[in-house]
Length: 149
Picture 1: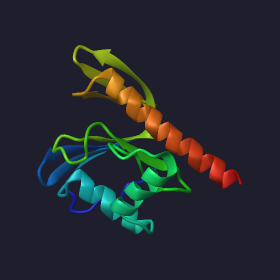
Picture 2: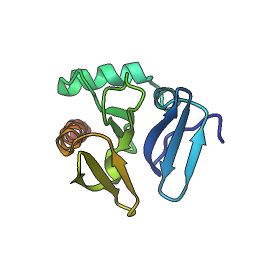
Picture 3: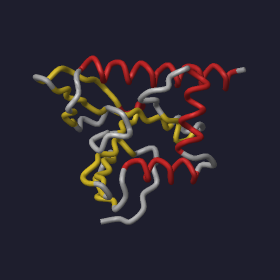
Picture 4: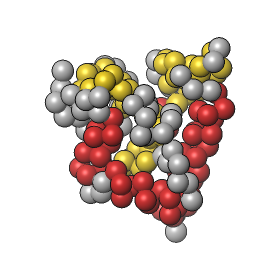
């Protein structure tokens, strides 16, 4: 178990295990971290000079989304994560946009495949995941256009 974790380019997903414990999936390994997913996100945003709340408000200003907003953890590395449900819910997963390969309906759930072949089953509809990927992609597009200016 790890006490602190910083999101990086290898991070695929943050998965809640309990009130104060998360599973972090990376390309090569997975870790149990003694923090909830929101704390991991906030600490990672702070490491890169902001906070979860600051990034949340930034996303609102950039794309107008107020609910289930994707978060820019770090701009230059394009580390954008999106929630699978309301971040206030205890079962909210956070997924790295850059690592998503595809997703498909699996009964009432959605199976998400990462570019490295790892898969996770999400307890949300395919439509909900598609909507979250579109929001995160829109955020990525706005950022890319601003960087080009």
